[in-house]
Image 1 (tube, rainbow, N blue to C red):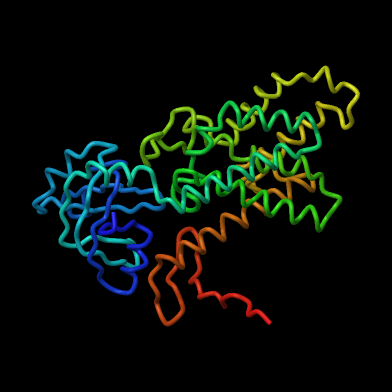
Image 2: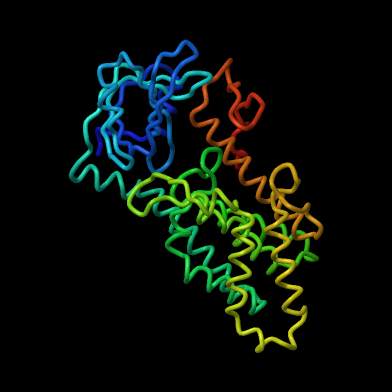
Length: 340
């Protein structure tokens, strides 16, 4: 697929000016809309393994009817000239598309080799972290979750738009949070390491229904359970359901008591957004809950910054335009620390 590129690379190239490219993409959704003056247009949500963008097709475009008929999950080869608009992001000019077929389609749907390798490494880290938990209740709970939901976990995104919004993004997010949690527990030994790491594993487990990506593609269909309950409520329900399968009678003499462990883990899930206005039904009330909230926020924010640097337009020199949902103009980082 040497003549093809991907959305993230194209966004970076187009930031410096108009870039011609051939882009393999998958159709996630086609929505019919109208401008303020009533002119019809389509918003075609296009995705690949790393990124997504919206192709706007106006009614006077010769391919408007063909775009209207695009099916969800269709794989296309989109050819055209691309720019980065300060407000609307990546845009296509003078474009056309044909179906993506054969070996090119198979390679596209497999995802880039480097991304697959990184996510495989991250999943192994998650497995080893769970296996190393000293509390047998939390260890067995985590291993039961991975055994029962591992394939679904591996294809779930951490969000729809703003951070780790790709197939396998939740694996990347959880693994990096586990690295942060290990470092923080080493610096502050009063934290309950097992509880915090279990909280990292389960804090977004409800997103397996809210943000799950299809098995053979990159589309993220909406799920009725996710819409009705949200990932925090689903996560609490899932942990309670798995907890009932544990052989708790084997650990009746273990301290702290099993019921206390369950309640503290549920609190981590319930409080990880940090504030009531951000969706948490309760604010963090334990050291581990506070730590989890900030670890989650840190990893999400750093991912948003990285994406802003990769594809965001500059407004002057090394100053980047605002990146949603960060309401600031980014400034290019200093760079790596020089080695002595």
